[in-house]
Structures are given as C-alpha cells and as structure tokens.
Amino acid sequence: MKDGNEMGTAEENTPEILIVVPCLNEAAHIGGLLGQFTPATERIGAKIVVADGGSTDGTQRIVEEKAAQDARVVLLANPKRIQSAAVNLAVERHGEGCDYLIRIDAHGAYPDDYCDRLVEEAVRTGADSVVVAMATKGFGFFQRAVAAAQNSRLGNGGSPHRHGASDGAWTDHGHHALMRVAAFRSVGGYDETFTHNEDAELDYRLRQAGFRIWLTGKTIMTYYPRASVSGLFRQYVGYGRGRARNMLKHGMVPKVRQMLPLMVFPVVAGTSLAFLHWSAIVPASLWAMICLGYGALMAIAQRNPDGMLAGFSAMVMHLAWSLGFWQQLLSSRKPERAGR
Image 1 (cartoon, helix red, strand yellow):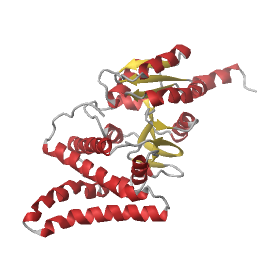
Image 2: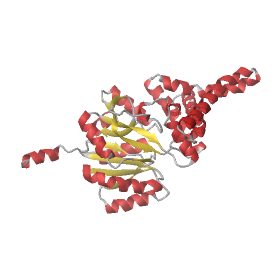
Image 3: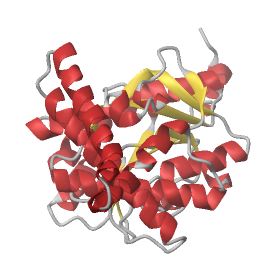
Image 4: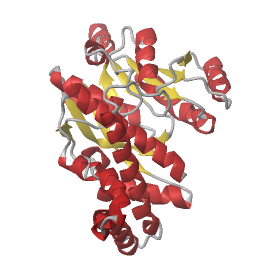
C-alpha cells in the first residue's frame, strides 16, 4: 500500500487537461458530444470549453444548459468565428496550469475512451503532439460517396493520417487531437490568418521548433463530410487556398501526392482551347476517365454502389482544391475571407 507521500506524488503527476470544442451552428451534434465527453472530464480531470463562433441555431442554449449542470463545461464566445481563433482564445482564457490541450471537432464522432488514449500516448511516448487517423463516414447517398472517395487513395492521395498506423509512428502531420500546451504556446498557437489548413501550418512550425508529432494507432476519429456538391466544392476551394498560403509562407515545395491534383484546374481550363485543336481536351478527359474508372472498380471490389459516385466526388474535390490553390497563388498573399 502507498503511504501518504506516495499518493500525493501520484496526484501531483496527474496532468491537467483542457478540452476545446470549436463550433458554429452545431445544435444537431453538440448536446450528444458533451454528454459523451462528460465522463471523460471526470476520469482525467479535464475542463471542456466550447468556443462558439456566434451560432444562431440553438447551439449556445444547449451548451449553457450543460454548463448549468456541470461546472466543468464552459461556453466561450469566439468573435473571430474561425476554428484557429477559437482554440487560441480557449488556451489564452483557460489554459493556465494545463499540461495538455485536446481539440475536439464538433462535426465528428469519437470513441468513449478517446481522451484517455490520447493522454496515455502522450505520457508514454513523450510526444509534444499526438495526432490521429481520420475515417470518413456518410449517411445520404452523396455523403456516402464522398466518404468512400475520402477514405481512398483517389481522394486522400495516400495521406498517412487518412490510413493510420497500427503501432503508431512519428510523423510530420496528422489530424489534430492532443498537444502539449507549452509547445502550443511556444510557437504562438494557430495562425489566425488561416481559415483552412491551419493544422498543417502549425505542425510545420512545431517541427521547425524541434517538437515531435506522434500518429497514434490506439484511437481514431470519424468525420462526417459535406452532404452536397456545392458544400464540398466550397470546402475544398478553402483547403486549396490554405495549402497554397502554407507553402508561400514557409517556402515549401508541394509533395508528389499534391502535384497531381494541383494540375487539375489548368488541364480543365485548357479544354477551352479545343476550338484550336481537339487534343486540348485529352488531359482533362484522361483525368475524368481515371477518376470515374477508379470509382467503378471500388464499387465492384467492395460491392458498394456508393463507389460509382465516389469517382465524381473525387473530381469535385480535385478541381476545387486545385482552383483554390491557384487562386491563392495568383493573388499572392491577399487575406482570405473568414468562414469555413
């Protein structure tokens, strides 16, 4: 049996955790999410800060009701609205004395022991940041097709955090889950001029400062993609712009898996020259055939009819990402409009 001194030491070594949930109009999800994570706050001694960007759908009322029942739940107004500002503000207002920050995206699903596994991995590996793999799940026909595309190499280009690592691995980027507050603060937190790709930009600065990022295989999060073509297109235009801003800011060179979709908008725009010669449509036609063919093969191999539309979904993502990238590149360093 431990004596009093040993027990006191164990308590002193228990890390303090801050859970941050950036959100905007998430009334459909926020109540269930807070209900799920409330037991975790008790197990690991955490506080949940919901940083709301001005919801008008009842999200704030739901959080206020939860906060009235549990002092560990706090509603924080995020006047800048975007996610990067939400996390920065939460750490500024509530991060004092905390060892770890856990970021929870309101538009996702998580295992009940998600926070426990993250903290265990951080303590075990000594990582400054623990990131997770992200699986995408849909419900309606188009959303399921988008999920199928995003879970495949056609849609994610072989990105490590889209596949995960069964035993865990050191990495340069992943879906943000847990971060050492001291590391987060030492590099200045998220760059609030980024409305998209702020996670990859922060990961770059963390690595440059000598901090280590661990991709855990012990847990995973589930993401629900956009359920309409227009919503998906706008989202990926933002992703493309964010990636371009990241590269411009840090002088980075696109990876091979990013180079191919980067060329999609130029080859699609090149079809306008078909009146000069029919060969102008060949590159875009080959891209469309590859995407649609890949989707058809997925549908056959997985016996999943959603795969038939996955190829089209991938085309939307490729074109939008490429368009956003070139828009940002050609407009140089003009600031993005807020919103996500």
